[in-house]
Image (tube, rainbow, N blue to C red; front, side, top):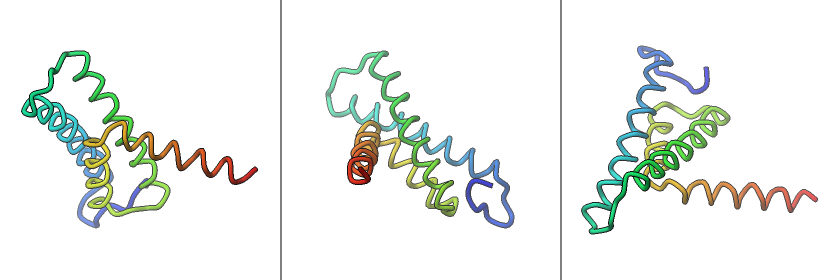
Length: 103
C-alpha cells in the first residue's frame, strides 16, 4: 500500500480523495486568475491543470516514500496542485543541490 489508509477505508478512497483535491485546487487556481483580472485562455487553463497534476503526483510519490497518513497526503497534494510549477521548481532545486553536494 502506498500510504496508510484508515481502518474503515480502502486504498481507493485515498487515491480518489487525492484526485478530487488535485482537480479542485487546479480549477480554483484558474478561477482565482479570472477573479484577479488576469486573461485566461484555454491553453493557459490546460497548462495549469498539467502543472498542478505533476506537482500533486510528485507529492503523492513523496507520501508513498514517507508513508504519510491519507489526510496529510490529500492536504499536501491540494497545496501542491494550487502552487503548481512552484512546487516542481523547489523540488528540482533540492534534488540538484543534493546531487552537487554528493560529488
